Structures are given as structure tokens and as C-alpha cells.
View (tube, one colour):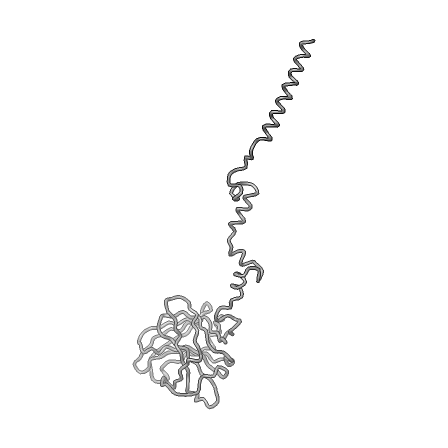
Length: 250
């Protein structure tokens, strides 16, 4: 019995010593967090941080309230040239029935032989044909306006061209105006097969009667009655001009 009691006492003392060593070891052990956790590259909650950091900034800009971010607010407030804020639509060929509002005027009115056709498809007005300079040399398509252009300074055309030098042609019903007078200005499209938005300043229009320059009072947008497109570049051959819309801008 004496030996048994002594054995139990030894076991108790050894157990106490081991427990004390384990606690000391645990208290002294350094942190074992994975390297890079502070950078958001490890798994667990830090993965959420990494995902949020890689969200495209464009999404945030598009959904941010106006005025929240200076850059996005400025972009949202910018008004592009020809936008509805500064302009009104004069012609928009959304309906094929719109073709009835347009008329073709070729050099046949003066004995020429140029030809042209106009079609409307996929919201685009297309004028195409053949210029023959012998005896004439022009083709045009014109729109009688439902109302004057108003207090505007320019027209913006969305066009796709073949690179030939087309012009806008305009007419007004200003007091004492000779009804034969028309006004022209270049539609300076690059003509590389892409759609272009071209601005024509109304202050730079040139007046003519049957192609001959005349000195008359300036064009009056508030009395405008007609707008169109003409090709009279003195070159024989085929042409193709496409129009999406026309806007009159202040």
C-alpha cells in the first residue's frame, strides 16, 4: 500500500508539471497567420477585400449619384455637340413613310442627264445615282420643312458618304427674297465608310441662282422653308450618300 500511494503521488506531480509546460509553450508561440493576409490575398474574409478591389471602376462611376464623384459628375454633365439640350430634330428617317417628305431634283430641270434615286431602309435615307456633267452635272434631294428652323446657328448632319464633296442646300421665305435663290455650304465628311456627325455653320452659307453666285441678304433660319443635300462637283460617275438625321442647333 505504501508503494501504491507513492506511485500515485509521482503521477500527479508529473501531470501537473506537463500541464504547466504546455501552457507556457502556448503563451510563447508566435502568430501563424499566412503571409500576405494584410494585402488581401489569402482566403477567408480577406478574399472579399480582394474581390471588391478588382471591381471595375466604370461600374461604380455609372451607378454613382450625380455629384458624388467630381470626375463622374463632370462627365455626366457634359453636353455633346448636337445633343437634345442644344438642338432640335429636323429630320429623322425612322419610318419608311418619311421618304414621301423628300423629293429629288436633278439637272434634268436644265436639260442635264444625271440620275438619282432615294430609298429609306433601316432608318437611313440613301441617295444614289450617276452624275453626268455633259449638259448639267448635279443631283440633289430636298425636304420641305414643316416649320422654320428658328433661332439656330448651325445644322448637324449624321451621314455616311463616298468621299465626294456634298453640300447642304437651304432656302427661305424672307421678305423680298427671290424664290430662285438657294444657299449652300460644304458638308465636310471624311468619307471613309464610317458614320460621321458634321456641323454646318449657317453664318457661312453662299447664295446662288442656278449655280451662279449672287449678292443677297443673309439666310434667315427663322424663315427657312427647305433643307437638302446636293452633289455638283463637276465629276462624272456614280455616287452614294446616306443620311441618318439632321438637327438644328443654337
